[in-house]
Image 1 (cartoon, rainbow over the protein chains, first blue to last red):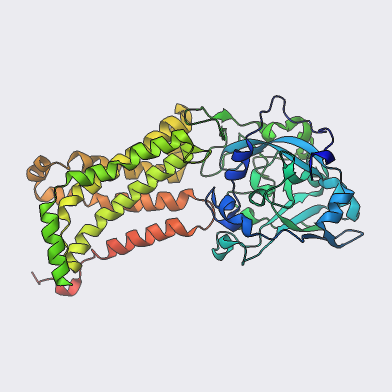
Image 2: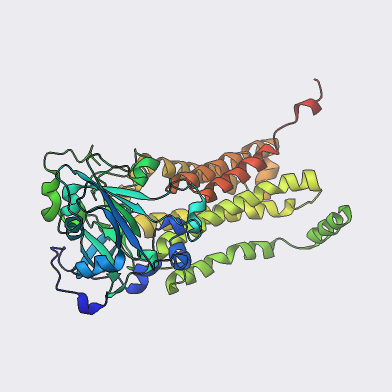
Amino acid sequence: IGLAGISSSASAAPEGLEPNTYEEITSYNNYYEFGTGKDDPAKYADALTIEPWTVEIDGMVDKPGAYAFEDILKAMTIEERLYKFRCVEAWSMVIPWNGFELADLLNMAGVQSGAKYVAFETALRPDEMPGVAYPVLDWPYVEGLRLDEAMHPLTIMATGVYGKDILKQNGAPLRLVVPWKYGYKSIKSVVRITLTDTQPPTSWNKANAREYGFYSNVNPTVDHPRWSQATERAIGSGLFSKRIETEMFNGYEEDVAALYAGMDLTKDT
Amino acid sequence: MAHIVDQVNGFVRKVPTWPVYILCVLPVPWLLYLAQTGGLGVEPIRALEHELGQIALQLLIAGLTITPLRRYAGLNLLKFRRCLGLMAFLYVSLHLLVWLVLDIGILSQIWADIIKRPYITIGMAGFLCLIPLAVTSNSYSIRKLGPKWRSLHKLTYLAVILGGVHFIWLVKGFQPEPLLYMAVILGLLALRLPKRRKRQPI
């Protein structure tokens, strides 16, 4: 996944984004399978075996099966996407991802007409993941998107950062990135993708439905019950920096607001 | 065992308390140095806030061990209790200050957080409990208040429980660390429950 495979960016990302440093992106992570500390993933994720890696694509698809990661890569076009990443904990980064559109992968498997949702699952390897010894969440980590969200051109499967293979603490070898949603929707180290006609369960929603909705769109006007979402801290801005205002849909409102037309976003959170 | 305890008690009688104050304050410049130089990671504000809060809770818990250590092990560390309490107050104050000034820094949001976010409300309540304790921690107040001083300083129990709940409530998911703190707090408080059988009939 070197730079050679990267074509020009097709994203309509907010203008003037300054990417965070590689060090920042790879040292401050939430990946609870490796521990709840921000530095735990960088410390412990190295134990994860990512070769070989297969992604099971099943459910309402024409060509279900176990897809080898290399075969997926060969069939996809890797692009660079500079995206804002907003965590539900009210911090944000700007990350130059490399990856391909999820729509391309789903089209490769052939989405059947009745499918309405896409479910995702993270690898669960108790021998390699010290964090899963604790019931912080109901393992394995699962996430889900509505099909139109999954097919949106901004939704990518990332395989790299700064033109290098994505590191394990960032979700190697491939992870979802949905830039207008809180970070936990962007599930890491994906081993299963299931097309379904019913809304799939999602890990944080199962853990605390009052605090984490299925959609989890970045929305400064709807607070998390325990903290405000109106502002965020830009990682790397230093000890004396001011918080910045959080934007509706994390700044991608023009691109994605239409997906939620007619919905009450204070209720469908 | 009793011999060792006697030796420790003898040693404790001889050492002054000021080195303990210095020892307890040392992490403050160290943490500030780390925060400035990248030693606390790429998000130093949150790390600083967390470290200060955690040390405060540890000092409050250390203060709670003094009485059971004396009662059950015969170890007399009473002379350090004021220091532990005052240092806990210092760390809670710094924790609050980092949150107010460095973390949020927006007055309207600070106020909204205090009244709307239960874990912050609880943390603030814990801080408020500690204020009268810090103010009356001097020998003059102990003499002046007499038996009332002891009753007043039972507020520590409430403050430390509020601190423990604050910690449990602020983390995401079911995390073991804050629960462990709470278990230790409740265990130390349980040791203080009166044993009914031993009470003298009036």
